[in-house]
Amino acid sequence: MRPIFCSDTGMGHHHGHDHSHSHGDGHSHGSGNETRTLWAACLTGGFMIAEVLGGIWTGSLALLADAAHMLADTGALALAFFAFRLSRRPADAKRTFGYDRFQIVAAFANGVMLFMLALWIVVEAIERAGSAREIAGGPMAVIAALGLLVNIVAFAILHGGDRDNLNMRGALAHVAGDILGSVAALVAAGVIIFTGWTPIDPLLSVLIAVLIGRTAIDLVVRSGRILLESAPDGVDPAHIGTDLADHTEGVVRVHHVHMWSITPGRSMATLHAVLTADACEIETVTALRRRLVDHHGIAHVTVEVERE
Image (cartoon, rainbow, N blue to C red):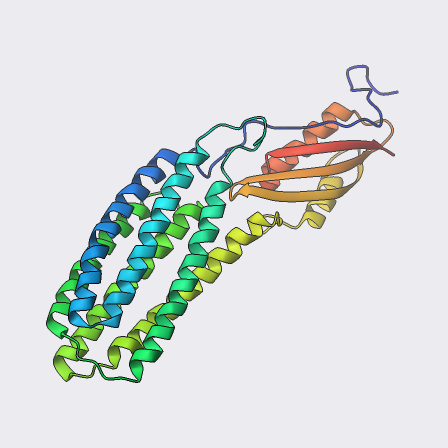
């Protein structure tokens, strides 16, 4: 006989939700991330116009590539800002998980934009490598140096935010790419000033494009896994099922384990727990939830109870 204080629902199910879990991406650091992203967008957008004019004036692909990157950055940072604003809206009847996931969509879009930009730079560099062009090294160096300063300030602003947030990581990746682009343009200007060797300009543009492309692929893969409802990074559902059965009294086995993330740091799980005939359902489900929180960092779980 089970104690009378135990639930007597038998083959029913128990939904165990621990509402103390953090909605970290977009709530705990949300307003700070939002402000930082807006400032960075204003900085990059403002200087991008100057860099476009400078690239046309000097004839430098490195400057134009960096300006194109800054244009994409301005759009990406504006998108990130909008995502932070939207994610603060509460859940409603149709969107029961709220709007947090929009940040991941924004991160995915940022990654795709970065990758397309890298391809454009490579194609343009190949075309320019076949034809010698006059490049004004002095003005190019001045504009590249100012661009580097602006990008470093923008990066410092963003770096103080929540770096576990994929949306912030996407914004940081864009600005880091801008810093590399400005450095490349500065180096190319120096080589042109001192040696007159203009092919360095498209050559360094390709190097930056490769670095941008690597960042873009990483961002697309990480955000894509969340959008495809993959198990959170470092989590093996089969191992967790075994771990719960081995360390929770009254549990025979755990199966049908499904795990996913709304955002990084906001993981969810559903599972079926087969209990022994005399196990207390309430106590056992509570123990399962505690194990998931303490040892696996998963605070929002739905448990379906079955009897042996």
